[in-house]
Length: 383
Image 1 (tube, rainbow, N blue to C red):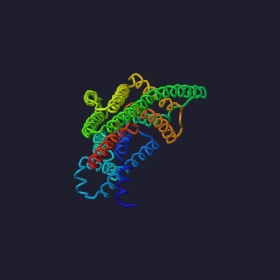
Image 2 (cartoon, rainbow, N blue to C red; image 1 turned 60 degrees about the vertical axis):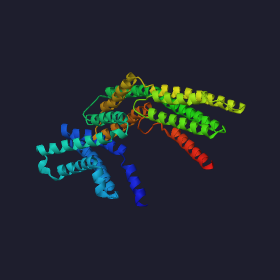
Image 3 (cartoon, rainbow, N blue to C red; image 1 turned 90 degrees about the vertical axis):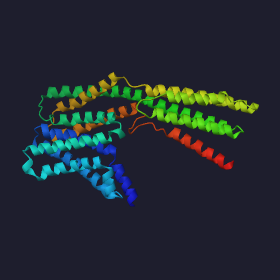
Image 4 (cartoon, rainbow, N blue to C red; image 1 turned 180 degrees about the horizontal axis):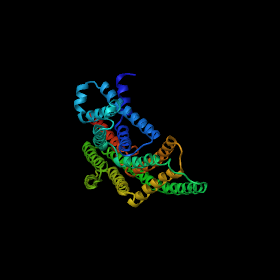
């Protein structure tokens, strides 16, 4: 494996998404160490998670620095990121290897420094990801991890255990039905947007192909210019935090007006113009459906209900009554992780034009732009 391929793999493994997830995960761990009185088994578990995440930050910094072509330039170009990484790496080492600090104010300052560094790293990178999605996931998982530390102190009779098991089973079924309804709702919107984009792009491609049937080169160039302008406006308007339709409509009206005012010289050109107008009408319909679907958001009351039910379901496992702390933490974290993934998935699908794992790409529009540009260049060369 050459150095460039290895560098690419390191960037994928230690991506912004992975590192911000670990940063968000370690914050409740530090808070638990700072504010809670942990049992020996809880301390071992928390320390294991803490050092695992520390190792990830250490490897990220060392590998990226070691693989950088110009190390000084890389450090200078990543000042904030490098500083926060160093603070995150050094502070737990000082805590561990300088036990004299264990009962002093310095220890608290070290942990506070680490929290601030983690917060800075999150703030530095959250513009590149969909923060709401990760926040939803880590809220649910954080509740599960925190709750697991209190799950070993409950003792019940056999009747209580029966009723608790019945409650978890019935509530789990209700939650599954609720989530299924929600997924169908957001997935329907997601597929609608994808289908309407395909329809619009196909119609615009047909417009360009029909326009090529005209014999004069000027019509070809004007069609390319108006189409490219419209495609640029569509991408700029849709793939932003707030959808803006005014510029899309303005560019599309220019396109319609051009062909409406075009005078046919032959009967064939008249038929071609009619076909183009029909394709533009289909494109306009698809665009309207696309914008309406994109603007439709799931009601806030549904999100509130989903988060509440997720929290209750995770919390209900706390009262089952575990005897072993590690078993309790592992099982409750797994359950909360699965529930958190479901919530994060729905957040992700509900915002299809924003950053995330499951989003709609502008690639159909970009591919059509490249197709038009390539064909235009080919025409210029032939002429």
